[in-house]
Image 1 (spheres, rainbow, N blue to C red):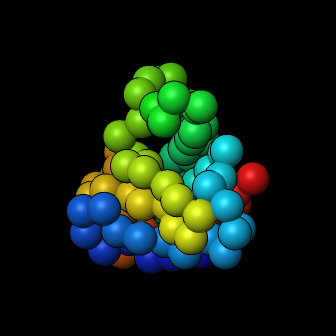
Image 2: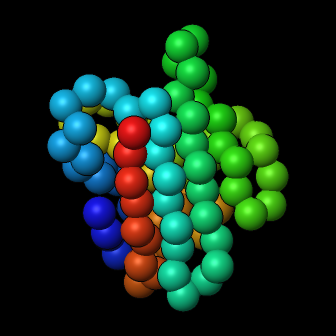
Length: 88
């Protein structure tokens, strides 16, 4: 899917997977950033990106219907940037 960033906090992005995703991959344009988020069994979400592997700040949570992103570049929701995503 695709969405345009709007800097909203905890913005819901509908994924239509029908269950909580195990992995969310987000690629950002025009910047060359990418985010790879893992949902672990304990509920912690970790992120591998162009800069680090850390506890996620870009993806705030996910459920059976949506994943949620925060505001700004590192949060995968920078105003007017385009984001392409896939969930597994």
